[in-house]
Image 1 (cartoon, rainbow, N blue to C red):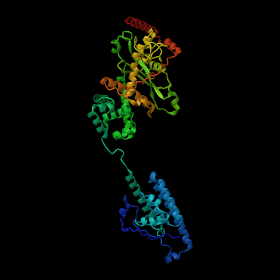
Image 2 (cartoon, rainbow, N blue to C red):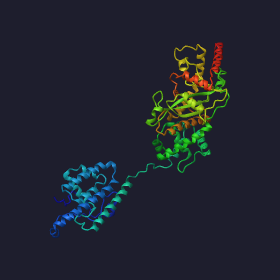
Image 3 (tube, rainbow, N blue to C red):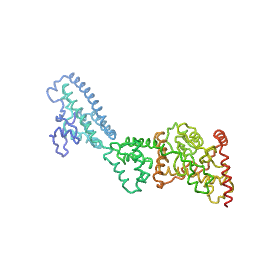
Image 4 (spheres, rainbow, N blue to C red):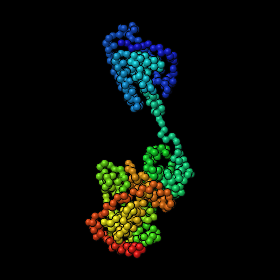
Length: 545
């Protein structure tokens, strides 16, 4: 069956004189400087007298060159085809191949039809046509442009075939770069958006700065100046120190993801991560200055309260552990699974009665007990937890009553909820009185943990950062907590998480008798001090009644 060579009448005037430049632009189909040459079949005398053997040899040569040409064009197309339209174009290619096999189109028309399927929505139009309408539609579209290749009967010499291949590759290059230019989009088209965002916060309503940056305007500016003066950070070419610090504060203060910060500040994901890590390291370096041991004077909370003074006059603060959710690899989950069944790191902290952190040890696995983390803090050679002679800290029942610590009595009510519950009996023994006042004073550490988590919600959720970075975030937020207290003691408290401490809402898991006895032998017992305080406290309590 010979291919159809007439042009169907669709009622549209087709302009045959289209320039080569017009055909190569982004809105025009692929074109070539020669007109379509229809294969009219063997009608000339020369074709009638052609030897049959020469016909077969030439046909074999043309078929081989045709397959090679198709292979080269297909390789070029693979680099340009959009994955979203690959299936549609593959279906078109299958249909065109079937039409070629049935003789409805010739090889030249098959080649040019494949090129046509790369133009806009034409593959979808081609698929939606009825089978008997596809050949006229192809002829109409192909006659509207110039031929991509000369007809197979014209390519009689190697030089012409090579010339045709050069045309094909040249057109493919133009299509490829035009395809890239049409689909290219600038991800962050706006400049200085981040700096303008920070200026609006600083110069706007004071509550906006508190809500977004978790500190007031003066504290934020002071923090930026301190980091700059200590050469911990510096202004970059397109991002200032204020913007760098704001990126970090939004991340930890609202648990913002990288993508959210990227859109807010109009920077790439790599830039956002870079400055989060930079500010994180800078704040950890400030830890030596802002997280330090308190002075040895009696805290004002004790000194001016007759319920606590003079009984706890040598107390410097309270200790406790807090569990921070972590994200770790599956192979490490067993070590980080705590007694509640969640993945966490056990953070040991020392808090003064001014709500400041005086010592922080982060990074221990969630299945480690509080007492084990305490021993690590006491025995480590790098930045150990040092308790001055004659002073002590308050701890709950998970810690042994050793030198430097004062813990409650076993077997008696301890948590304030047990004393304040409806229908709860009044204090009836010296041990209960000691436990009640001990718990009232030690709740400072739980309030500090609640304030820390309320101000920095990133500590409440698992974040897919490297574990070392997760540990650093805990230390950095503690530094920020102390910084805010130093520069604005009456700062807004946000949503305080009252249940932040591990034992805030559950009964205390006391350290075992064996461990307590072993540590008392190794580190010294504080039972005598506790007994003397209890006796004097209960005696005064009965006298005042």
